[in-house]
Length: 267
Length: 89
Image (cartoon, rainbow over all chains, first blue to last red; front, side, top):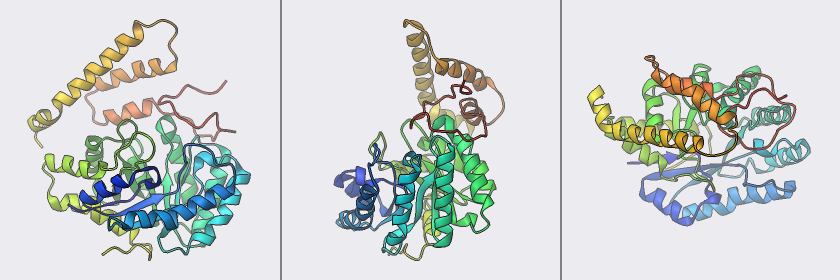
């Protein structure tokens, strides 16, 4: 089995997790910028974080022959502070030429506020001006439905944005059709408690079809499972899905989306 | 998969989760003090499981979701609790 992990916060994980992912068949790992679990006190903290994502982390992954890519942004949990958010946004163009940067992400909403929306709009503009792929985080739990609708409205209002170059992540049963029907890619995130379990993820794929969907573990510093994608592959095989169908979903689909970036190249 | 195969694969897991939910409700009910909106949200979702229609998971998620459309003026915090407390007063 081979797979691509398109969304994992490896800065929060141990080196042993890289090894376990590689042993499970991981061919590449992609890391969106996210919230550290605490608010950073200045844009300098983000500058260091972007250096970590574009310099240090690829070297750590390379020790196990694992190509590492990343996405850059200020996450919605910290974008309520618009002064800080705009200072961080100003840093991003200076990193976009680094060889492992795939695009802008994970941008989106957290509590669906006006400030979060304003900064999301500025991220979308940045992505459009620099012709970058976009990875969108949708809010958690009770905020997801409303946030997904607001995000879709904003993306669809910008004529420069091509839906096929945007992945909207963390979809669940009540949002997956909203995203796919609008022409965007959908990401299903596998978490032990919130988001989706392997069984529910396979249910969604069986009902929505495998076109334009990827699976990811989004493993971070919270309760999460870095091997959730291969575990879901096993779930598919238990239900009788073919090896090819599994490969198409966990390797072919992320490869197809991510290859829209000229920087995403794996052997 | 046939219905029998689905039962063979998933019945024990569903049985376990059903009993966990029942035990959770027992635990809440024998404890002191007032419950907040989250218990009511679970009680409102439970009848959805009896529907003969498909999309029961979606219906439960919708019942726990903020149904409004307007952005908030400011964030009340960073976290989400899993159920919508209702419109702010």
